[in-house]
Image (cartoon, rainbow, N blue to C red; front, side):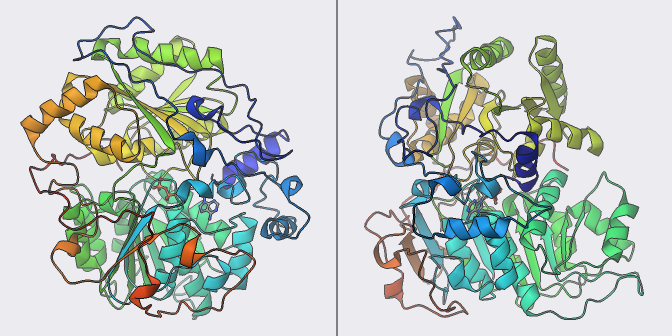
Length: 634
Ligand SMILES: Nc1ncnc2c1ncn2[C@@H]1O[C@H](COP(=O)(O)OP(=O)(O)OP(=O)(O)O)[C@@H](O)[C@H]1O
């Protein structure tokens, strides 16, 4: 949950926000004491069975895709109580957090926010959902994972801000990635959407800058700015979001963060830079422009982060990224520290990315490119000509049954900018308040659309892939793939706009004949996250095996793990991220700061009986799924 939304939530309404609970979990939510989530919420039943709405399809077989509750409710049923009232008599971390929060004026978070301030670290985040997630760390001398933020020694100010954000415990990616980054190691990190990657790269950078404070160069005297850290993102909205998040983390630390992206006034951004910059968050185009105008130098960069790194290094962005990283004045790998983060990392991109890294650690929390099983995925067979009416039925159901309640938002992905505008118009004239976002809109319109959607003023947003990556929009209850993307990784990122920070969500996809090439990889992805797959989709998948060949993780495009594992003798460690066993978690016990690059013995990095490592060679290599350039990017 982003900060601004917390603020919005806290100022707009003092009432408690009822968290979205998808239908298959509604009866499994455990009442965890007097202040646990109210499960008797207003959300009614939800069904989009095509047969129910009378839609006929020529799909093979006739099985529907309705979800059952098979074995999925258990873990996630253990929602925690929230806020001060839910605390027991003993003093807890949450108690301290609320005390610190009192004076966090600008960035205040509502204590009663049912969706969890800052992601709900105080209770909204369901850490149980992340238990037993397999973790692969590959490389030499890998620093030990941390169970608490305290033991990482991020510095007093930053630690206070972490509490203010109500981040009680690190998420699995944070447990593993932060110690690695704090130790100064290069990192290629892959973790599921909504699992806290932003903090995983922001904390080490902010902490490092505070610890090695050196006089800032540039500013008004020379007119050239010399940031110490550069965070690159593929979209303007994501740059802006990371800037907002990083500002919270760096509150009262003196670390200056500036954002630069296209479509907004460059002179305004120059003025911000002139006030001093430690961390620059930027989109590539605007950054190149600023460098070429001689206003930014990368000579003193100590930290380089590519968020959505696979996107930044694919065909669309790679030349620009190479220009910035290799042909400007940025220090070389090994001199600077480089961190790459994404939820997906095709092996060909991993290979490319290794040019930017030096002796790096590869970290995968969960299978690379997998979707979180917090998202209930549903695939319906819908012909193109029926899509609008079918969508209308879904939205109508939500309206009537309350699935799209006061705070629940629906995000609809389409293939092209034109289709986004057309669908926005059609929905609006049919009584469904919708707004479109895509790359042809001017920046102000894009920002207005996002704001209107986030606030719930327009609860339906129709988007191209410009909104598919990174955006952390609270209360997105339902993602609808009106048009499926051609690339399964884009699907993973799109549906990842819901089911974030331990909360659950729904994703519905409209599948038709033209999506045949996606069938097999979609089935594999859904299988991995324990989704119910309709028989007809299985049948399509079988057809697509014979036409395209290969498997998702077996094609050259996909890697289930570190691509180096097949070719080098790098150490491999497998963990369960569970807080049990040898890594047992006790939030009240702070261990000494022992993460400064200490190389663990392999016995410290054990394979949990619950974890399922991805053995090298498990997947046969076959034909590749085509690489496509997504539409609507900056
Ligand atoms: N330790 C934590 N405790 C509680 N909430 C957290 C914690 N870490 C992150 N969050 C919250 O989780 C949400 C998702 O985090 P973030 O946006 O960093 O995910 P992500 O992994 O980068 O997702 P994506 O792959 O979609 O970019 C945010 O609202 C964030 O505030």
